[in-house]
Amino acid sequence: MGIFDALNTSVGGLQAQSFALQNISGNIANASTTGYKGIGTSFEDLIPQSATPDRQVAGGVTAFAQATITTQGTVTSTTVATNMAINGQGFFNVQKPIGITDNLPVFDGTTDYTRRGDFQLNASGNLVNGAGYYLMGVTVDPKTGNPIGNVPKVLQFQNNFVPAQATTAIQYAANLPTTPSTAAASGAAAGTLTAAGGLNPLDFTVNHNPLVLGTPPAPYSNATITGSQVNNKFAPPGPVNVATQLNGAANTTDSLSANFVAGDTIVINGNTIAFNNSGTGNTGSATPPSTLSIDVTKATNTVQTLLTAIDTITGTSVPSTVSSTGAVTLSTGTSSNLNIASSAAGWAALGFGASVTQNRAGGGTPGTGIVIGNDISVFTKESISGGAVTAYDATGTPVNLQLRWAKSDSSALGSPHTDTWNLFYQANPNATGTNTAWVNAGTNFVFGANGSLTSPTGSTITLNNVTVGNQSVGNLSMNFGSGGLTQYASTGGTATINQISQNGYAAGQLQSIAVNNNGLVVGTFSNGQNLDLAAVSVSHFNGTNYLKALDGGAYAVTNQSGVAIAGATGTISGSSLEGSNTDIADEFTKLIVTQQAYSANTKVITTANSMVQDLLNVLR
Image (tube, rainbow, N blue to C red):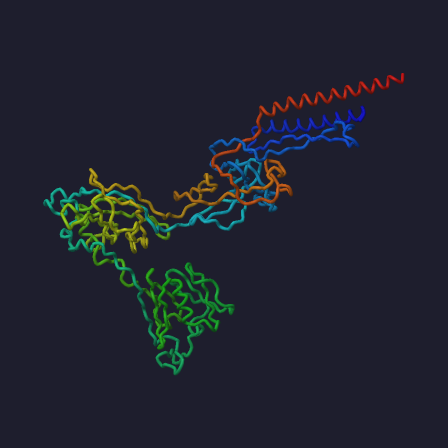
């Protein structure tokens, strides 16, 4: 190795130190960049070949970039609800648009990965970070909380609308006083249930036995209505029944073509069935809201086809039928009353008028366990408030559900009396006369001497067919939880409501979104609900430090990094950002070393040049 080799080696040293200086300058420049991962410099010596070790000389040098992607930056909190940071391993899945069409981003399907979590909602409803990358995740059904699929996609939340959810369950926890303070107790005779704050059945217009106050309202049952067979265009197999003749002709078929023509319609409980003669068969579905269109030219479409469609709309489990004499019987089922209207001649030919109105049988009117309008004043004086909750029917209409507790027995009266309570809900706030005002929940709540609930043994009861005013809420499950209902002494003699909530809500429109510490995007809706909308997707790699850096703090997959693996051990922190992992003090130290090494290499070049000049002077 000679003087000229030394010159070349020094030049290589200058290049290597310049490469290091470039990395140092970039790290310092990005000291405040969100999610930035510094790049270090690794030096590698280049040893020239030699036949024997004793002739080996020091060689040149080259520099390589050394990634620090796995080094965590400092996580700090922010005031932006959609900012997020990953504590530990993992990357956000993102895509960057390749263009904009009709003001909407266009993607090529390439997924990149980033730790930069300064995401904010843009005009299109996407979460975009400061470098223009769009966040990916898996959408969640806001009503069930379950993921919709498992393939991440670019998230969008613009104009999300959540439908109404009917109340099905009420969470309730309360302490009932040992001696309730009721208005009727103060003037009652000593030793009576009324004096102990209880309810006296003899004070009511209808003499209720307190032991049967818990009898729930009778459930609804199916009711039927049968048409006139003389007008029915149907004849069973066998001889033609003259009673089924219409317009002087024997009708030996129950095909719909003999009854209906294209353009006829039938409206069942607000759902329309239309008839057509397209020859292409039936279209749509009879499932409410109905979009069914029945093809009258289809040979297999019979009167029973129509009845089955009607049963699907009403939801009855009791089929509507055609008898052996041709009489059509319609069933209401138990869920609602039956209302059918049609001006079609074919409908009238089935033995019904232009409209059918048939109410369900029974239901909703209990024989016992109610308070009528005439007894509201007495009931209010002999019971205490149990709180109120706003429930919702299937359309999202709010229903004010008022509760009251009445003590129907008291251990203060001596054995075998027990501390027993009945729960009532208000069925009609405007009830008068003999109309039902309050309905008993149908359960005797019995408490032991220590104030704990001994009966019922479960933590849930069902309020059957709850109707408040004209609003039907249906069956409600009341959940008390373990130890949620107690009877401890209370100085005020009133019920202390520890919890009363329900799971229904009205329809609502998305107002804002935020990211929680579980990595879920939570939407706040106009109906006051906070519902999970999406789960942020994160991935990790076996060779993290071999990812290819892209502009904006993103990374692309390489052969050395391996493919992305769904999930990560790191956790997402909402309203937080990960800062740069650059250590300024460390970079300044490297800067001094790099400067000194660069200067030293220039000295070698100066010395080598001097030696070459000395060699040239020998020839003078």
